[in-house]
Amino acid sequence: MSILAAIGHVSRLARAGFVLAREGAFLGVDPAALPPLARALLALANLLARRGAGGLDGLAAAIDRLGPSYVKLGQFLATRPDIVGPAAAMELQKLQDRMAPAERDVAAASVEASFGAKLDTVFVEFGEAVAAASIAQVHRARVRTREGERDVAVKLLRPGVERRFARDLSDMFFAARIAERLEPSLRLRPVEVVDELARSVRMEMDFRLEAAAASEFAENLIRDPDLRAPKVDWDRTTREVLTMEWIDGTPLGDPARLAELGYDAPKLARTLIQSFLRHALHDGFFHADMHQGNFFVDESGRIVAVDFGIMGRLGRRERRFLAEILYGFIRRDYLRVAEVHFEAGYVPSTYRVEDFAQAIRAVGEPIHARTADQISMAKVLTLLFESTALFEMKTRIELVLLQKTMVVVEGVARKLDPHLDIWATAEPVVGGWIAENLGPRGRIEDLSRSVSQLVRLAADAPPSLERLSRLIEREADATPAEAPSEPGRGRWPATVGPALWIIAAALAWIAFHWR
View 1 (cartoon, rainbow, N blue to C red):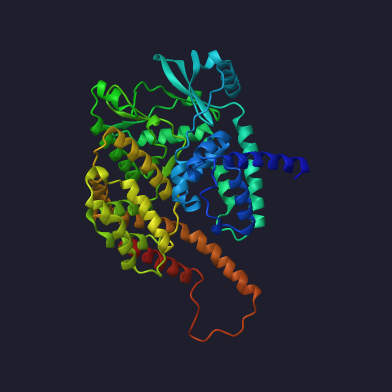
View 2: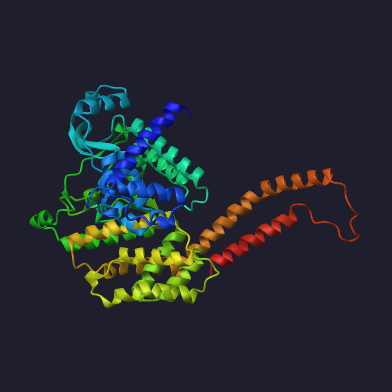
């Protein structure tokens, strides 16, 4: 790295540090948890805090001032309370990803560059931006099809954003590498954090991936009478441009307007919660940015989701874990909730299930002493993840993202119906999933999947065993025999021994999953 590049990194990072320090973002940091050099820097930073600065309360405001790259970093860290702590994660959830849009002429030039064609050959009309965030801005446009003209939403990568993010991420990598060199024993690995952020941003900047997510989500909603997603216009979608059906609807975050139009706000709240849980459990694919600006109610009364840049996935194992812990809390079966954690391998076997159940009871019992509108499912999960830290529970990124999403969706639902009984709303969905997937029918499907995997394993075995046999023969030719074989104890053919081991392993796998 050149001296000029290093100076550039240091100067930009110094400015970022000054903004954070000035807003008092470091006032709440415990110096005892830091290495000696970091304590000295913390003391210096806190001297710069303006009068009346409020510690973590100023963190989101300070990050907002630093620009889109730091906003994205803050939003990313909001999903990782295991890294920044629950208090900081809650504060970072306040970050607002809103920016001033680029002018229409600049946006139009970007569209033309992306398609390699004049704007009027792609869109009949192309209006001003109607929304703008750190990575993209959205325009209302019009296209001509065989059926006639129709309105579309055009999501456009903000001009210059890739260059800006590349520079800021380079600064973050520079700071992360310095931190790890100065303090190799850090529990937090800064380089890994920045690298994970960089991968996330790269994916979010490729709108073909978002289009694919929207398409998959829409397919999952085909039989859902209450929730839908806009159609993707693949002919007008590139890496930098995403074109989708324009949604005319009322924002879900405007209960007063919904009431004026005659919509049943409490019913919409129940629909939102149940649809989220239904698709998270059934499909293992959920919208992970469920703030109120991303949902509308159309003329038919259906909820329409938009913005698929952040999606979450849950494997079958994680879905079972989620369903059983929620159902366990609903039924006050804390021992079963604890057992599920151990069965999933999330808590080390060195701990006792009964002790863990006791910790879970401390989370669950207080909620049953409150009225339904005081009980928060998201709060319960947050407390659960906090308590599991005492038992060295392994952090699961997909579950943390799910928990963050539940906090947001529950907040939107409560705004529609302040007296919403979250647990009674969730029970039919969660209980139904458990009955279908963990009852007799689910066991049969599990066996079917196991047999299918065994068949595939058997089909792949002959060529694999043949290669293994050749390898063993080469090893035998290369190594002198130490002693002749005993008479009457001829060796099995090279393929028989491994084959028996493979079959035994497969049967053991089926037995374990059939329990």
